[in-house]
Length: 253
Image (cartoon, rainbow, N blue to C red; front, side, top):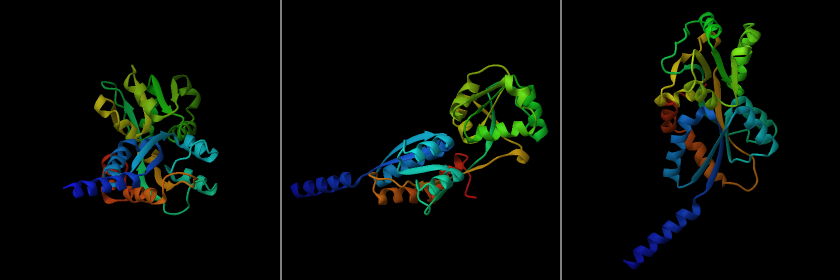
């Protein structure tokens, strides 16, 4: 009995000793799928994950400058391309997380805009009391779309911008009047249980889809390579793919 207890204690000690802390920096649009996948990884591997979110521009700036030193970076493909060129993340073994499109959100009881075409969306924006979107990659696309339509000056007095998508959706949910929020569909779905309404995706003719990937960072003292590789394998697994799909993060390109 004593021998069995001693062996069990030894195995537990080895398990704890082998556990690693893996720091992950990710774009916020992936939160609803990424959190349950990482929780499953922790249960299955014994490793611990420290997860933080930032906008794509913030990820680019923080990792490039060295202000953030994660073990794993999850960001739009274009951001990872830039960081790889600067030797901040690896150039191989990237894992595709999936694609996220832009959607339109309104608060409960508000008028639901017609999203059947670019023209109906344009009309809805012009009729809205307020149009809200972020200053991250999604918002930059929306800003460019509005500029392309020649509506920048017209909408400017009724436009509100926030640093990230989560703040946009909180603002719309707690707002009043005929507000329209634009942002990643996954971020809209995060507040669905609290009543935020996902009207639908942007019309296909003006939709913009962002492809997200994961890459190991090139760093100094950090998590062991095998722990990071194990996490990349988990992100690429069929089980993770099912979770991502359910969260609105659709399959690879």
